[in-house]
Length: 219
Image 1: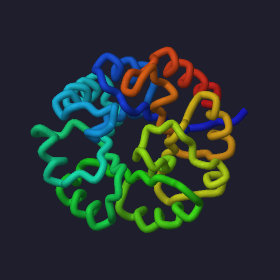
Image 2 (image 1 turned 60 degrees about the vertical axis):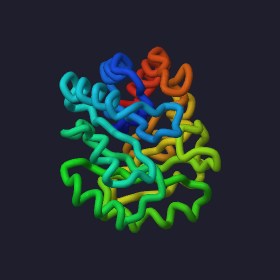
Image 3 (image 1 turned 45 degrees about the vertical axis):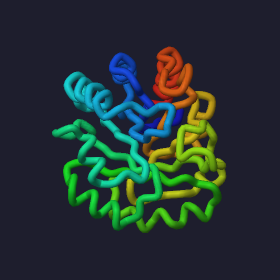
Image 4 (image 1 turned 120 degrees about the vertical axis):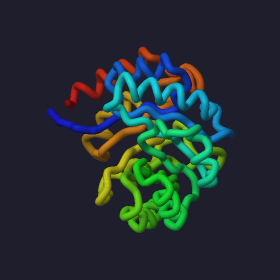
């Protein structure tokens, strides 16, 4: 039997209740979308409420704020004082210079960089970022959206990659794909959103539970 230590992030959480339920089911990280055009967007005030609750009740669960092409000043403003996120996931076109400047401003918050993969050549540019972030996230490319499309990266692009930093797989991750992900791709973490939803931002807790049960078969 395959044994895995693969971590799970449930992304696009929009309510305190669902954040608590997802944490209780064993998620390693909870993601909140801070991109205004996303259907899963929630306000800085609501984000703070959710993250404060998780920080208090489940301090071991990572609290990930997903941003896209935001000004550094607006990121700090949206902390509303003391930041409650433990990780900022940069899901836009942020370059290394931007990442270095952001890190200087918030040295105690981990930075993840997401990359949208359209073809195998897109993987080549990632290596230059490894010295500047704590983790890498690979998502599928979609001309309509920067994330949350439910589309998969072509699996053959992923089966022989390796990074010096932990990396997470996003884009169409579902219970049905899980066995192949764990056997053939073997990321450090998987990012789940649309496959466990009733509608954007509304998680189906039964589906989250089934996903976590399926993963535990390989623990």
